Length: 295
Image (cartoon, rainbow, N blue to C red):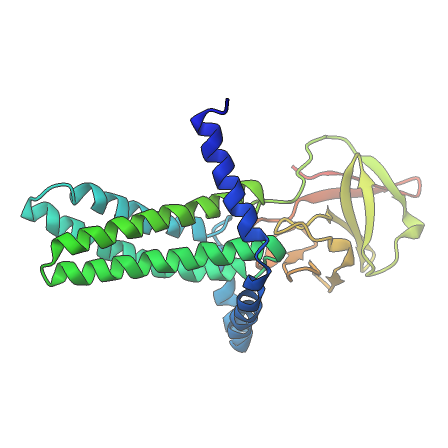
C-alpha cells in the first residue's frame, strides 16, 4: 500500500505530466517568448546588458531564485501575522504583503527572462508556473486593497488563496530546477591532474572548433593566431554544443542561446549563461595536442 508521501509525490508528478502534454499552451508560449526576446534585442547593446543583469550573469548563478524568496517569505510572514487580531500585527502583515508585491515584480521579470530560452514541455510548465505566480500576485494585490479599506476578513481570505496558488507555482518551479535542470550548471567539471592526448595537432584547423574526447569529457579545441584553446564543449547554460558555435578573435558563442565565453579562461562575455565555462590547459607534445583541467 502506498504511503501518504508516495501518493502526494505521484499526484504532483501526474499534474506536471499533464501540463507538459498541453500542446495548446504553445499558442501562448511562442508569441510571448518572441516578444520577450524582441524587447531585449530592440535595446541593442544596452538591452543585452540589461538582459544579462536580469539573468544573473554578474551573480554567478540565476537571479530569479534569489528574488522569488522575497514574495514567498513576505507572504508567509503575513499569513502568520494574520492569525493575530493585534492592530500592530495587522499593520505588520500589511507591510509584509506590500513588500511581497514589490518583490514579485522583480521575480516576474527575471523569471520571464530565464524562461524565454526553454522549449517543449519545459516551456509549457514554465508558462503555467508564471501564470500561477501572476494569479497569486493579483490575489495579494486585491488583499492589500481590501485591507486598506478596512475589509480585513476578506483581505485575509484573498491572501490565503494567494499563498495556496503561490505554493503550487513554487512546486512547478522546483520541478523545472531539480528535475529538468533549468538554471543549473550543465558543464562537466573534471578534476584529473595530468595531461591527456586528444588530437594530432595537424588536424586542428584555424578558427574551426573541433570536438574531442578527454577521458570521457567532451572538449572543444580552437586554434586562433597560432595558439590553441580548450573549453568544455557542453555549454554551462543548457548544454548546447560549443563545437557548433561561432568563433571570433577572443571568444566562442553557443549556437543554442548565444552565450559567449572567452577562449582564454572561459569567463562569460555575454549571457544568458550565469556559469563560467570550464577551461583546460593545453600543450603540444610529439605532434599531439594534450589537455588537462585548469585549476
